[in-house]
Image (spheres, one colour):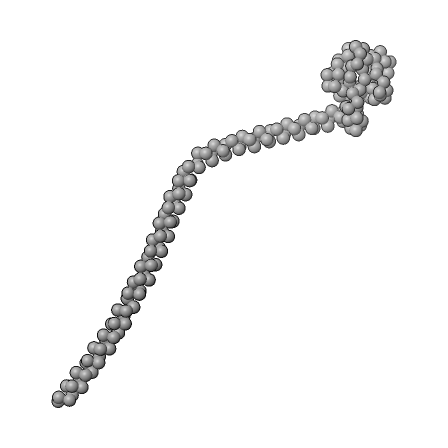
Length: 178
């Protein structure tokens, strides 16, 4: 349908709103639309719910859509805004579909990699605990070893002193004998 023709037709209805118009009234309004095109345009506007057909032969504007048409300053602008909204909805649906598709791929990837990563983590945790236990036990052994070694160090020091004392006594005894 030609938007300009529909805009002219809707303007005829807007001018006489809220009165219902018959086809002959529309033809008298000198819209310049041929009768065949007029009938097609009217059926199109009824199918789009812009016009209401209370009787078989009379038409009137749908009050809800009439407000929207008034807000957009004509049927042409109204249709353009509807097309823009439809395009935005389609873009949003495309984006949401792509997002859901990517989420499904990620979910499959997560289920495939969960158990290997989980087992790897458990093995790493077990080795970490074993390493910690070995480190703690080594620390205890070295502390016990240091405590055992300290008396021997003292005894070695004492024994060296005793040996030195004996030697010095022997040297004195030898000098005394000579």
